[in-house]
Image (cartoon, rainbow, N blue to C red):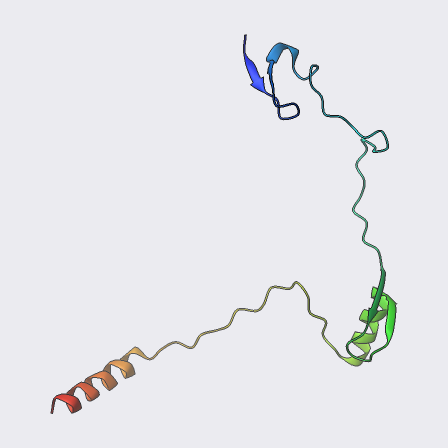
Length: 103
């Protein structure tokens, strides 16, 4: 007979009786049906641009667009381009300093 550890009760149960012996307790008010993710448009915020209070994200963003303001948030920053080092110029400068120091 094979057994498996139960995460619900912390005991061991035979596989032939699994999962009837130990089921998680379900809230009767909670449905088994999947629900879509709902994002509300309501917000109570004061604009940093004009100081007015807004109750809608869409109205706040339209005010920003009308003023030419860019709203930033969770965007990934643009990569910073590092200038390529001129290795030949660095070598020549090191040689010049070396010869000047040893002379």
